[in-house]
Length: 117
Image (cartoon, rainbow, N blue to C red; front, side, top):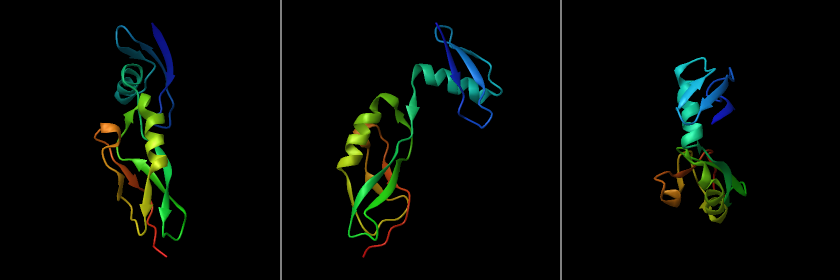
């Protein structure tokens, strides 16, 4: 079976054709595209970005993201966990809001400094 993808590793956006059985890629302009294509059809992962509610902060929410990609099939479950989370101000970039989300070994971290009121 062959899948067609557009590589998102760099701005070139190469049109990839990935042979799933042979685990081969054509159309890539660099080795990173080949790696991306194979990973995307065998084990797709994503970095999740969202916001978390903040108590006692100068803003009501703060942006967060996973510090590493997680398996794509866990995206919605991860968002459920993020939606339950509450940070307490002050927070700074890199503070962990959720440690080891869904047992993946990946943390959800703050991506903006936020002062307390």
